[in-house]
Length: 126
Ligand code: HEC
Image (cartoon, rainbow, N blue to C red; front, side):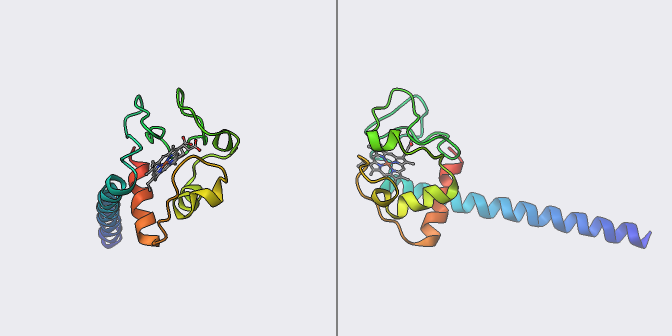
């Protein structure tokens, strides 16, 4: 019986920390949305059917670079040959011109690690 009680306590605390983790992730994504609106939204929509000045960023995490239909990418972006992992996104927002020399996207440089985390957490929700 004691074992059972202990086991359920373990399960309960695991559940509690899981929902705490989910809360923390939601909070990061909310911060990321603020940063996105400030730094990216002028050129990027979150709607998969809407490319604006830049390609839609809907589903960007895991997507092949330069692959959004009906968007006129630069030759550099079309030839990038990688997919948007978290690491690649981090490099991109740190210095996009370094990651893909010749890209048409205006230079961005978000170097604060926490801000990068928030932005990526938000991009993951799109
Ligand atoms: C001034 C307009 C502008 C701003 C601001 C901007 N972008 Fe872009 N972005 C573009 C353009 C244009 C491209 C396409 C680049 C190319 O074809 O070389 C692009 C491409 C991208 C891509 C590659 C998408 C794909 O389909 O491969 C990602 C990811 C991206 N931007 C993320 C961001 C993020 C995150 C921000 C904010 C921190 C941001 N961009 C700010 C214009 C912008």
